[in-house]
Length: 334
Ligand code: ATP
Ligand code: MG
Image (cartoon, rainbow, N blue to C red; front, side, top):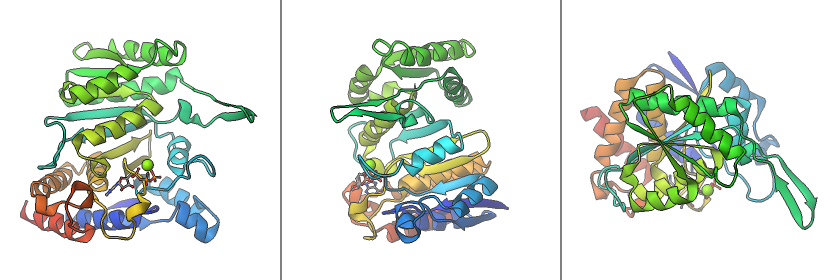
C-alpha cells in the first residue's frame, strides 16, 4: 500500500489534482491519497500558508503530488514551492519536455530533459534593501549542491542511453559562482567517459533552443536559468499545460506541473490536467510502478492524438472533466 500526500493548491489546482487522482485510481494500484491543504487559499481561510498538518503528512508519506500554489509577485510571502524545495532539500528538479500526440508545435522530435538545481542560486531569497534606490540579491552556488544535481543528470543519461549532457551557465561573466558550477560539472563528467559534455552560455542556449531544439538531450543548469529554460521549452512543444516535473531529494520526492495556478481559468473546468498527469507518471516510475506509469503516458499521448480532445489551452474546447474521462476510457483499452 502506498500512501501519497496530495496538496491541491490554488487556482486550477483543485480541478487538475481531482482529475489526476481519478486517472491514477483507474490504474487499480494500491494507493491511498492523503489530501492536505496549503497555499494562498489556505492562508485566506486559516491564516496559515503551510500548516503543520501538511508538513507532517509530507514527512510521514515522503511522496507528494502537488498542484500549483499562487505566489504574489513583487511582495508578500516567500514562494511555498521554493520553501518546500529548500526545507526538504529537494535538490533535483527534473523536467522532461517531449512532443505529445498531434499537438501543434514549432518543432517535432523534441525529447529533452532539464535538470535544474533546486535549492540555491538567486532563489536562495537572500535580498537586502540598501536604499530606496538600490536593492541586492545574493547568488549562492555551492560545490556540494552542484555535485548532486550533476550526478543526477549524468546517471540519468547513462540509464537512458543518452550520449550528451549540455551544461548551461554564464561563467564568462559570473566567473566565481557560475565558474564553480561549470568546473564542478566538468569534474563529474570525468566519471562518465562515454557521455559527451557540451558547454553553452545561457544566452546562446536560448537562441539554439529556438533554432534547433532536437539537438539537445539533457540540459544541466542552475536554478534560475533552469526555471526560464523550462518555460521556453514548454513553449516549443505547445504550452505550459504539458510539462511535468519531479523534485527529488534524499528521501522525499514531490511531483508537480511546471505551470502555475492560472487564476484566469480557475473553476471554469477548462484547465489541461496533462502536465500534472505526466508528473503523476513520473511519481509512479519513482515508486517502481513502471508499467502503470507507461499506461498513463500512453493513454495521454493517445487521447492527444485527436484534436477533438484538446482543452482550451491547445485551441480546443474539451472540458477538464471530459478530458479526464477520455484518458480513463483509454487506460481501460490498454
Ligand atoms: P502563477 O502565479 O501561480 O505562476 P500564472 O497565472 O502565472 O500563475 P501560469 O501557469 O504560469 O499561471 O500560466 C500562465 C497562463 O498559461 C495561465 O494564465 C493560463 O492561461 C495558461 N495555463 C497554464 N497552465 C495551464 C493549464 N494546465 N491548462 C490551461 N491553461 C494553462
Ligand atoms: Mg506563472
